[in-house]
Image 1 (cartoon, rainbow, N blue to C red):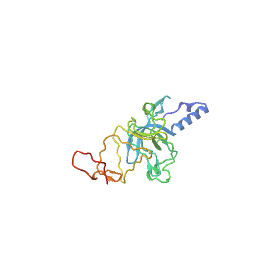
Image 2: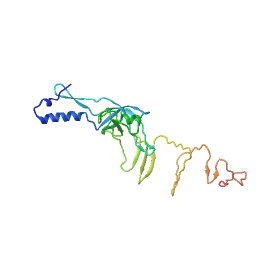
Image 3: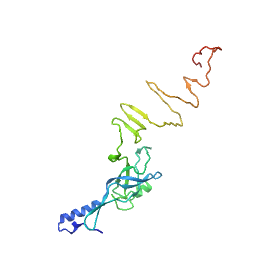
Image 4: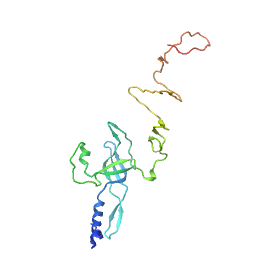
Length: 231
């Protein structure tokens, strides 16, 4: 056990300062951290706090040391009303840890309203993780200043939403749509434009005409050109 040299001072003020500093050193509200591992089944992480602690040495000096890795921290995925936005979590991701003023272990295990397992609070074991906070070296590039985006970090895949520009989807990969009960597209007062090769497995119906089975009437053998399709 080490002793703060101020505790040996005859100054009551210095003694109080030492006492309050000791109290604050074990009282946590929030701090940045780095993901060490992720459990996708429980949606919890182990995280290494990214701010070091000062440890008092026997000679009265202080040494910067790492806090221990904190296990089993619930991760926040934004959501409500039966809808949730999820994203992959990887080792090395930066996050912000918030520390509850009461133990949340009972709630985390059982949900609902619970009696806390102990009287502790605002300590390292009472953390929740908010992902997405970034240090300056890891700041995203080319972040839009006039649209909401859901995007990859490299910006090559994004969904953009703005009052002025509408909705945009762009990617250097593939876009897939799977719908169990159909897909409806309407251009409203404008057109639906398509560029590229369309490959259809199934039927195309154009104004009620089945393009794979329709017949032309009045066709004569020879080199003439037929009219458009008829019912």
